[in-house]
Image 1 (cartoon, rainbow, N blue to C red):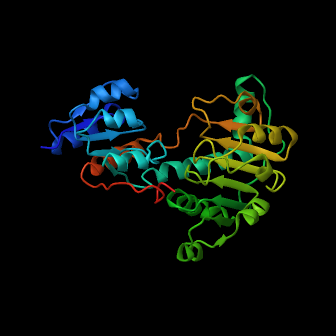
Image 2 (image 1 turned 135 degrees about the vertical axis):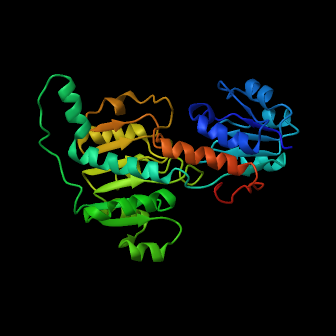
Length: 315
């Protein structure tokens, strides 16, 4: 019998997941506290063949101390916390299902678009402070030009959700999706065209070597003046200080981020901007998404492969 140890906190938060896991793996061990620290992770997984994980990191030290480990089964939406070189070196297979939280994140992205164009959060802050202040510069989402940077699993769902708003959708992705673009009236564009043409720009890129630091100050200056910028992808893709500067002078009309370079966030100038909405990386914080992520981890116990450096999703 395969020995399974569950590090992901989802199985404590949602007993239903634990019940489903234990049906097929009745001897599985489920952590009751965080085991993210190296020593804790090594101790917890010692002697186990499969680790069902959230965002725990497997360093050289951890992998060297766990010679019996054969599989890491991921409950996470992304795998930027895993090193494919180390996993392959130690012969550890990875179970992962892309786009597992696409519905939750896409709904949040739409929510944030509406929030920033209508100044919803700003008005709520005023009301809580005892001020009856109606925003004088709200805009409609309807009939705007919305840019989608990254039209994979989540980006496609955002496009679908935007259909009732009669927006013009621009999409930039290194892959081409002609059938999808035709069905949903999406115009594929280059990065420069995306930046110049989008009134609202929503980022849905993975975090990898080609996207880390992509939105520099120089790139932000290529955005359409008065753009609304939404990031529900990953932190580290956008220069947060540069965004704060452009919010202050109006080059960016509003921004909403669910992800940050450092989490918990440490970007006081950005957070203080009245034109900024920040959330604590809650894109997947829907019951249905948690169930889907946990079930993806369970599937990963038996559906897995040795990851290849430089090959999706490690590219």
